[in-house]
Length: 287
Ligand SMILES: [Zn+2]
Image 1: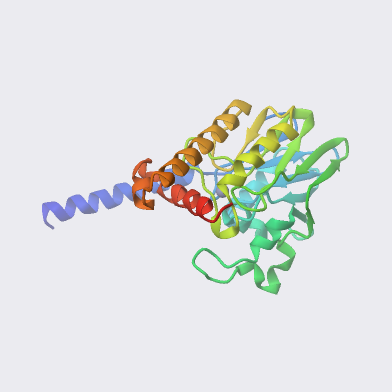
Image 2: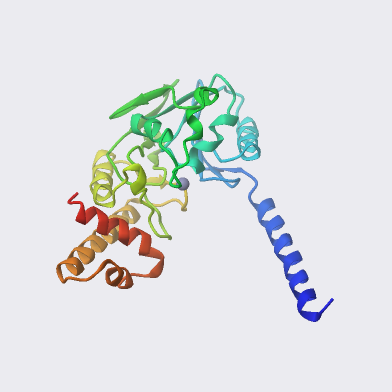
C-alpha cells in the first residue's frame, strides 16, 4: 500500500470512529425545564418536547427514525407512568413528523390545519408525499385547528396557538402558561441561517409580522424552545425579527438601485444566498 493510500485508509477509519462517537452522543435525552416540561434532545431529527400533565403526557414533535422514537418513549417512561395520550406536530417538516409512524397506536395527533395540508404536498424534489399512502392515515394529525386550541391535561393547561405564515404556512406555538415556556418549532433559527420553505408557502415577509404577533399574543412567555437552537428569550426573538427586516430593507434598496439577483446575493454572506433569493422572489411577486 502506498503512503498516500494508507493515509486515506487511516482517515477513513478516523472518520468512522468520529461518526460512531457522534452517534453515541446523540442518544435521545430529556432536558428538564420545569417540573412538568422537558426538551427532547438528541436522536435523529429536531429538538422536541414533553409536557407531563396531571392526567396525561403530551409530546411535541417526533424524531425521524424508529430508534429515536423508541428512545424518546423510553425516556418518557423513565420520568412518569402517566399515559402518553397526545402528540402535537409544530409543523410539517420531516425532522419533526417522520417519526409519527413509530408512535404507539391510539395516540391523538394534533396540528394546525395547514400543517396537515402540507404533509400531502410533493417534496422539494417533486416526489409524491409518503403520507398519501392510506396505511399512513393513522399517523397524520386527526385533529386540526385554525386559530388556537386549549388542552387541559388535568390541571395542566397547554395552549396551541397560530400566529400566521412564516417558516411554513402551518407553524404553531405550544405554550405552557404555568411555566411561561413556548415551543415554537422552526419559526426562528438562532445561530444559523433562517430557513423559509417557499415551496410550502412559507414567507419571510409574513414571518416578521407573525413573530411580532406571537410576542404580543404571548406577553408572559419567557423561554422559547425551537427545533434547532438552544433556549432563547424574548430579546433573541426581537433580534431575529430585526435582522430579517434589515435584510428586507437592503434587498429592496439594491433592487431599486438596479442590481441583479446575483449582485444582490453577493452583498450578503454566502450561506444566506438561498434566503436572499427567497426574499427577492417575495419582493418581486409583490407580497
Ligand atoms: Zn426542523
